[in-house]
Length: 412
Ligand SMILES: Nc1ncnc2c1ncn2[C@@H]1O[C@H](COP(=O)(O)OP(=O)(O)OP(=O)(O)O)[C@@H](O)[C@H]1O
Ligand SMILES: [Mg+2]
Image (cartoon, rainbow, N blue to C red):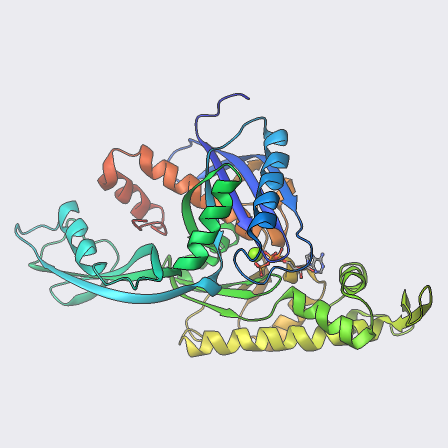
């Protein structure tokens, strides 16, 4: 195996697939990090996983296999991995800190101090602090300041967004990764990664919800003024569509999954009312014909429900009138043709489907699908961290990040 100076390993353990992506950070100026994709591996579990690591042995084996595939393609082997954690296993909150400014002008040390104060909250024993993301600052009670260094004042206040993960989920993920022979560099909130992979910096700035329709879950993250502001989940996803087809068509799960991926569309408007599909009948070896329109109808009902629940969550979070960029749908569940049509009828804001691609080169085509949004985002997150470490100390990096949009101004 050859050495790659800035190798990044990303691992997404989803409920319907485990995916590893290896890439190399390209050092190219000040803009968002650019990553050359070197290898991709994907393994499907037997059935749908119920929780973070429901069967440690099986998950460990999937991690091994996914990484082996990616390593063979890449010709390199990572040791540490950026590993995604589902939004279902985190709680978020905001916290404030205030410090007095000694000299007149606010400097990097003042910023460090105010972050320290803001994040000094008691973490319950069954929780782990995953991310602390500064949101806004106020100087002498004047709020809405994005980057206070260099300003004059006597009182600096910071608001930080804290992401606390379930201790058990975090432990299980680390255990599975370490048994597979790797180590977790950092656990990263899945929808934070998805937001990096499929939203443009402009979308993150003007306000956009990234909605990842996965297998078991739909994860929602709202970005506004360049930062993640709200995270939540809707407890249904692609697997719900399949389960509905199991019940509606009276066929086994694996068959329903095939029907969905081969013939499924998310709206009856796209289904030919004359056409039928051939599926297993009730007796062994028997077949029966089901109208394509029925398949579409079943999926449409559920898609409408999932997206309506997403809208409710956006409204509940108080962001429905603040999303200039609207909603970007991604995740495997958003691959269904007609998803956008249903979304247009649910949301009264701009909607598009997003797949990774920006900031990626090399074998980027192999991840240019909605189901790879989280994995690609984990890679971009890792790239950002490595680049941060290359800066001359935190100060210069922070200044660089502030210039490029500052999404990653966080301290772990
Ligand atoms: N081409 C496709 N057409 C329809 N559905 C698809 C397609 N590709 C993937 N899916 C569906 O997407 C879902 C999986 O999406 P994804 O890979 O994003 O989820 P996951 O990461 O495994 O799960 P989660 O993040 O919820 O734990 C499955 O239900 C699968 O059937
Ligand atoms: Mg996923």
